[in-house]
Image (cartoon, rainbow, N blue to C red; front, top):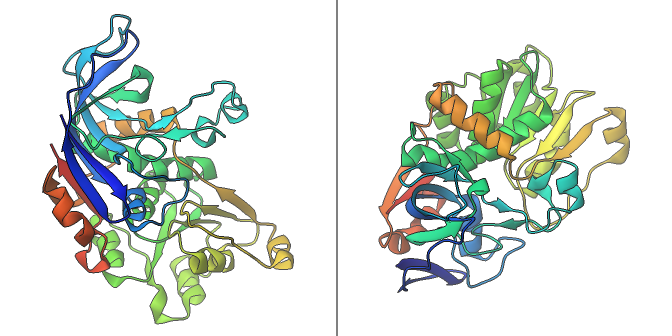
Length: 340
């Protein structure tokens, strides 16, 4: 069995091991067909990922096939195609779990982050972390998890058709938030510093209102997108401290600011300004099982189009040689997909 290990920042290693044991009675064994590369993987490669230790097998955006089932498993059969919900809950008594928020459990273990993930030919997993759709391709299944981050944020903010929504950052997570906000019928705009990514959002997602932050007069241009108003819901998907701090400026009085992006550091804001606007500040982490089910249904129904997403591809062993290139802005990666 092939396996790629990130031994330390900047150093992948391909090893061959024996194929893992048959699954336990309550598990299934899956064959990995697709691995999406996300910001977490890129940050881990660069040595900038919080809550992370080395060595680690990366990979949590996965399209997999069930190849063996334990004797107690009835909900899946050999040949089923699935996406993986990578947020494992080792303690079902965790307070957040009891509150219906397992996505932000205190003791969460994310597959490919806190424990070894899917950059290998096979692994065993409990069926509750698999979501089946034999109607979708492995590419589509591997995109469900990154779409889930945006989907969960939009659901958490309660976006409705009457809302004015600004998404800051047109990387994969921002694009996902745009897609699910678009489904609600809300009026949308996107703010970016990179003209290429802004153009991608306009052309691929048919986003009419785009603002290039580097042009100046940003707040006024945002108001123009909304006929003089500010957005009442702002998602910051940049993971950039400067952007996240500035985002307070762009939210309408009485509005919501949702941080989807993550960085290692502190955010400060002016407290009187925050209170004057009576803002709601929210964090959004991971996704829920219900989000995964929603995404599968909406892709199957044609409401979410995954065709624009994958801009780069590589074979499993080839990935080691091209991965560093994917970390560079000039490569213009939106979503890189590894094929097994």
